Length: 149
Image (tube, rainbow, N blue to C red; front, top):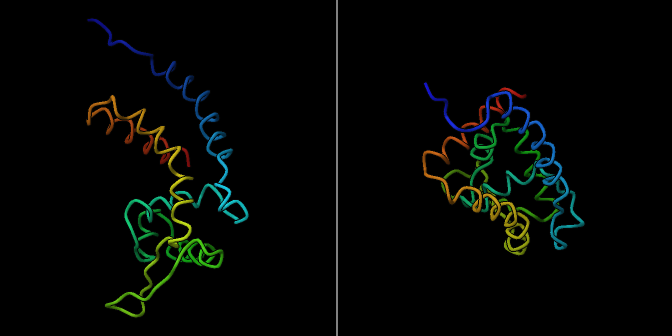
C-alpha cells in the first residue's frame, strides 16, 4: 500500500509549531495606517472591523454572534471604537431599541487599507486551491483554534 505524498502528522505539527508564532508576530507588527495610528486599536479589533467592512452595517448582537463573544463584550468594543470615531451607531429603523453599527465613512478607507495587506496575502494563498482545498484549510484552522483555547 503506497503512502500519500506529504509530511507525516508529526512533521506537519513541527512545521506548524514553527510557523504559527511567525504568523502571529507578523499580525501583531502590522500597525494601523497613519490615519488610525493615534487610536487605541488592537488586533482584536480587526475581526470586528472586517465583518463591518465586508458585510456592511449590523447590530451589536449580530456582531457578537459572528465574533463568538458575549453581546456585552461586543457592546463594549463598539462603544470604545465609537468614542474614538471609528464606528457610527444609529437607531434600527424598525426597532428603536436596537442599534446599527457601521464604520465611520471618513475612517473606512483607512480600515480598508489596514485589512488589505492580509486580505491580499490570503487571496494569493487561497487562489490556486480548489474550493474543497480552501474548505480544508479553513476548517483545519478552525479546529486548531477550538482545541487550542
